[in-house]
Length: 172
Image: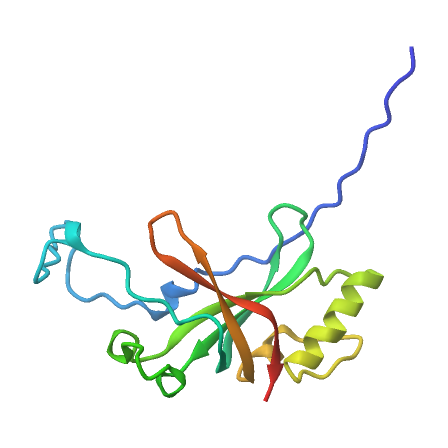
């Protein structure tokens, strides 16, 4: 009886990171018993999702929160960057008062592993974000860049519209 060879699966190590929002939180009040009550001027049952930035036009945004991640399905390396569109970039008919600090749009890179495809993807990504391309590319260098991009809408399970970057951003 022939034995099957065990296939080895390459393990991808992801450094532990604290949740992004946790670093922005402070205790608002002593609520050790969980008794705080949120009060609104209407029932949240009647709440509707806020409007999303319109598709079909370009926006200028600033990058932040760049981090290394591994694709859940393939395990391949990629970079996730948040592009923030400031209020001065909103269309005239967009309700700026809903997003006074800007609208955040996530960007997910293609695979960036140490393969011919991954290196080529990194070359294009570095060029798009005006990051120096070399043997070592630092994820933090993708922060603080001004880029031009278009948004793409995708429906969410909760009835809201999720925004994503359409195509590749371009440094400005």
